[in-house]
Each structure stands twice: as C-alpha cells, then as structure tokens.
Length: 383
Ligand SMILES: Cc1cc2nc3c(=O)[nH]c(=O)nc-3n(C[C@H](O)[C@H](O)[C@H](O)COP(=O)(O)O)c2cc1C
Ligand SMILES: O=C(O)C(=O)c1ccccc1
Image (spheres, rainbow, N blue to C red):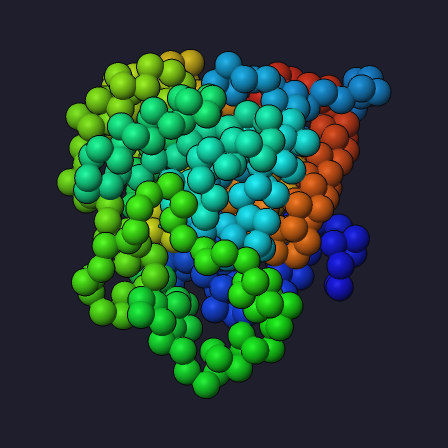
C-alpha cells in the first residue's frame, strides 16, 4: 500500500499513516489508555450484532441524508474533534474542514486545535461545531462562545471525559512528553521519516491556536497531552454545563457520556444532544463501548435529546448498526486522521467516498432505502 488510491477501506489508511508518520506521532494518534482494553472493545462491539437483510424491496435509490441538531447532512457520519491536527499533516484542520464540507457533513473543531476557530471557519463554508474543554480561566469559555457565535459555528460540544488525562503509556515510552525525551531510537525514527520532518519543520510551529501561550512549571516528563491539559479545570460540574447552555442558547451537546444516569442529567440541564463516547479508549480504560450502552440510553432518553455515538466506527455496517439501535448519527476520530496523514485533504475525501460507497451498498443489501428505514429488528444480537 503506497498511495491513497490503494486504500479500499478505512483501516487501509491506518496502514499507510503508520508508514508515513514517525512512530511517536502515529502512536499518539492510534493509542489508548492503560492496557487499551476499551480501545479494542470499541472496535469489537460492532461484531456483537448480525444484520438481517430484507430482500425484494426496490433499493434502486439510496438516500443517506438525515438531520442532526436541525442541520441537514448528506451522510450520518460526523467528524469528532481532535486536538493538534497539524501534527499529522501541515494542512491540518483546514484540509479536514474542506473534505467534510465536500462530503456534506459536520466537522467538530477541537478547543486545542492547531488552527483557530476563525481560520477554520474561513477554510470552508461547511457546517461546524466547536468543542469545549474548560480552562481554569473561565473567561476563556466566554471568549470561545463569542467567537464560535461570530464565526457561525452551529453547535457547541462540551467534552466531559477529560477531567484529567488518561494514562497513555505509548506516549511515555516514545518520549512524547514535556519536555521531550528523545532517545537514539526515537530520533532515528524521526530521521527515517524525512517527508514528515521536512513538512513539519517548514510550516509554522504547531500550537494551541485558540488561546495564548501555555503556562509552564507543570510536572516534569508528563505526556505532552497531560501538560496541555494541566490548564483544564478538573472542578467543572453540571452547574457549569447548565451555565454554558444558558450562555450559548443554541444546539448544545455533551460529549463523553457513558451511563444512563448522566444521560438523564444532560437532558435535565438542557443539552439538545449527547455523544456517548469513551474518548476513543484514550481516557478511562474499561469504560464501556458506546454501542454497548446505546440501547439502554435510547430507552431512557431517546426522543428527549439526540443521541450520537463515537469510538471504533470503521465500516458502513458499523454506522448502520448504530443507527438501527437508535443513534441519530455517528462520529469518527482516528479514521479521518489516518486518511489525513496518508494523503492530506485528498486522503480525507477518499475516506468519505469509500465510506459513502460502503453505506450505499450495505443499505441496498439490507433492503433499506433511507436512514429512517433502519430499525432494531434488522439486528440480531449475539450473546
Ligand atoms: C489524536 C486524537 C485527539 C483527540 N482530541 C480530542 C479533543 O481535542 N477533544 C475531544 O473532545 N476529543 C478528542 N479526541 C477524541 C475524539 O473526539 C473521539 O471521541 C474518538 O477519537 C472516537 O474514537 P475513534 O477514534 O475510534 O473514532 C481525540 C482523539 C484522538 C485520536
Ligand atoms: O489526545 C486527546 O485525546 C485529547 O483530547 C487532547 C487534549 C489536549 C490536547 C491535545 C489532545
């Protein structure tokens, strides 16, 4: 596999990204917390269902469009927020925003993006959400809200599963720490990726584009992520969430919900959507996969809020299973980063093309013409 044209599914981009990126960068993208049990469970959870095809139902025209938070999208697959995207390709968030717009879907920009709210807004006219981490300095939140409004972001998404950072041991081993701890192996590895290195060195330094300089004096040899997140406030509560809902007065989602109880609380504070997520297995290991808790959350709050899931979505059939169980849409993180690392904007476009083609084919084979045709009786749960 040497180019994006030789990628035929989303995991093929992973293989290509693995070759293109220094190991330290790839592992940061790919890895999870502790023993990566949740990371693996996210992928495996989809295997717990079979699809029951219905035949002879006229599937001549397939329509993948739907509505999420009042926004029409061409595909029920949105892009999850990911920090520091330019680490993977210098075109970073701009490239991702353009590819998402072309695919007719929503891109959620991270608080800790390497391209600002405004620059990303200008990169495409596609629909966007802004994701919020809560800085110790609460003025930052007010500013984020004002800037998101000004730049016409359609929704805010408060991420609640990063009170502190997960234990990413791959990062510690690779020296992706602050300060950086390069050894002969990691240095050699970087030098063996001259194309990545040249691009990295010849574009402006990657930084947190949305806020001023990082504070210093944090714990020594923390992972880089732990260093950055030391600026986040671990004392955030539901009351702060309610305050943000009130300030924003628009579509508001809470990302990182893992239980029915918290789903109910999210509805109570006025969230118009929740994203069942374990942060791609990067935070609490042994947290459940979103797909595993989806049915109980749908039973509890379905109809009162929109329910999205992310984590481990890699195939058209994965999307179909989540929607059949009652999700409004799914989101993806790593797949678009793999595709970006593999081929920039063209890579992410190809990723969308492949996924869309898979979904069309799968819907036809399943006997469904449109998203609203999907229902739980098309699934068979394996014990
Ligand atoms: C490299 C990377 C960076 C991430 N950064 C953020 C972030 O800044 N904000 C956030 O809410 N989630 C972040 N996430 C979590 C994703 O939004 C999403 O929940 C996760 O990637 C979904 O799992 P998947 O990668 O299997 O699709 C990040 C994930 C990755 C892989
Ligand atoms: O890596 C992550 O999962 C993440 O959420 C993050 C948080 C702060 C900075 C960069 C990424």
